Every structure is written in structure tokens, then in C-alpha cells.
Amino acid sequence: MSETRVTVARGELRCHLARPAGDGPWPGVLVMHDALGMTPDLRAQADWLASAGYLALAPDLYSIGRKLGCLVSVFRDLMSGHGQVFADAEACRSWLASQGDCTGHTGVIGFCMGGGFALLLAGGSGVSSPGVGIGEASTADRFGAASVNYGMVPKNVQTVLQQSCPVVASYGARDRTLRGAAVRLTAALDAAGVDHDVKEYPGVGHSFINHHPTALQTLRGSAGPDAAMPRFFAVFNAIAGPFMGVGYAEARPTTPAGGSSRSSTGT
Image (tube, rainbow, N blue to C red):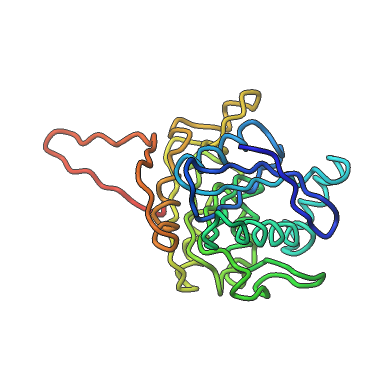
């Protein structure tokens, strides 16, 4: 696990790079952070992915310039669907894919704000020049799979996802900020004919996969820190190749005596 720098159009972007044990090569995963930026949780998420056999790169989008100004700019890009963050993400994806210990296959995973970016990037919002936006990246510049964890669903989601890669998305039923997001995203992915696994976890709120000790606990839930991760692996492994030993902490529902259990993926 180490810190590295990736050259982007606006300078040198500080990143956390997590390598699996062994010689590789491994598929790569770009890890997009939430609004808090580079935190111990972000590094832990990347390290956890590395332990499962992925070369994980977590860029700090706030590492060039003043953090407040960067935060405003990043959210502006998220709302508009184009801008510097997408150029940064493409530079990081390209850097990751070009590493000698990467297979060239790449996926993207994001949380909260980063989940919103992961969804846009799934639809091809990788930019190589100013003015290039949603759906305009070449096939070679796209990710093979995306994990969207409580990410904002844009109003033009059906347009965004017309050429999307497979998507795994996770939301919390108690997340008041994203009510109905899982249903709307499922409908858009269905309409676009995109392979997907969208799930709303009962009894949990926002950021339930992350661990920020100082955050309000009411935002979180009890599904487990890595409850949604195996669903991402199931999709990405179909593209990049399987890895073993992936576990998760989702509580299993109990079945009443004489009754039957019923599971639902999507709501």
C-alpha cells in the first residue's frame, strides 16, 4: 500500500495505491471517494479491494488546490455531468490500465458523491478533452463494470446510461436523501438494456458501507461494512476473471417455522 502521483491536466493528483500480494497481473479498480475526500476509510476500502485481488487506485480529488474550492468545483461537475473530475478519472483509469501489474481490465466503485460519479462514468463520461461529456468517451476509455453505492441518480439518467457498462448499485432504505433512487435507477437500466443488480438494503441509512467514526450514526445502519461488495465482485469477475475468498457481513433473514423466505433484488 503506497502513495503515488498521477499526472492529470491540472497537475499531479495524489492517490492511494493498494496492490494485492503476489506477482499479478490483476484487474484494476478506481475508487472514487465521498465528500470527505481522502480518509482512513477510503484507504481501507482500497486495501480491502486489494486483499480480494484487485489493483486499487483511490485518487484524492481535493489534492490540487484549496479543499473548499475543490469541493465546490467537484460538486459542480457532478451536477453538470462533465468537467475536470471526469478528466481526472480518465487519466487515473488510463494510468491504472497501463501498469505492468494490471490486466488492462478496469472497474470503478464510488461512495455517496463518488457513487454519483461512478454512475456517470459507467455511462461513458470519461473525458480526454474539454467539452467532452456524457456518453462521448470511446469504448476503449470505458470501465468494464461499476459499483454505485448510494450515489445520486441524475434527472437525465436514461440518456446517461444508454451505453453503460454493467452496474451494481446499493442503497439504504432509511436514506431519506435518496428515496426512490433504487427504483428509478432500476427502471433506467432496464430501459437501456444494461446488465445490473440494484438493491435497497432494509434497515440501513446513508453511507452504511463506510466507516467514518465522527459521522452521525443515524446516517448509517447495520448491514455490515462490506455488505454490498460481493455483488460488485460477481459482476466484475464475469469480465475480469474470478477471485476466491470474498466474504461479506450482510445479515441473513430468518424464516418463520412453517413459512417461506422471500428475497427481492431491486427494492
